[in-house]
Length: 128
Length: 128
Image (cartoon, rainbow over all chains, first blue to last red):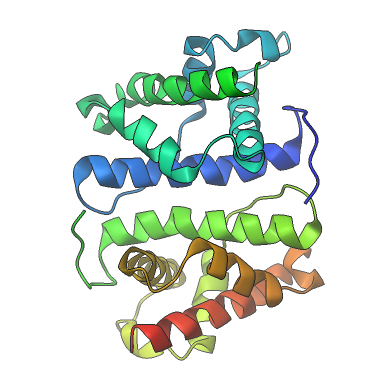
């Protein structure tokens, strides 16, 4: 498989979407002690990008959905490059979860915090 | 993590949803040679259940969405039990893909065929 180091790439974003939802679901399952799943809200990924200090890779006037796509593309790229495994991603998310990840509206901030830690590590390893 | 051998379990279905979309996205990426992703339609999973000879595990009067949930729960259970790895699932899907997986409306039948092969293997290994 060939892929560009371009975080606006739509293919990377769609692959990253399923990767992010999968590691999130696994971390949530570990956290709650039983099978669970869910989709990562774009709002949470936008928060995560900000917390990780990755605003410089987001083009001006990019909306929440676009920020989510870029975060997903970065995660897919990092995973394809082998700088991060699924197991490690799940562990980092789980370690940074708190009860709010299950809250009906406080969840975005809580999920954003955990994904922010994941993106910080990726930022370091990819020297972004 | 504890989980029941109950394919109507909602937790297994939601975990299985993200697992199915992830292995589908990886298989699609391998098949097309570039990062790609997508969600597996419930209609495709309903076709897959039928092709795999798994109608006997579906309660009467279950709609397409419910059939999809059961297929996803079975896949999550098989993966949690360790009878199937992500790598093997991706390989089986990819080997059973044809050009129609990318077709706007013939895709459901084509994706259903590939997931049918995956479910056949799981059926055998879990003695369903």
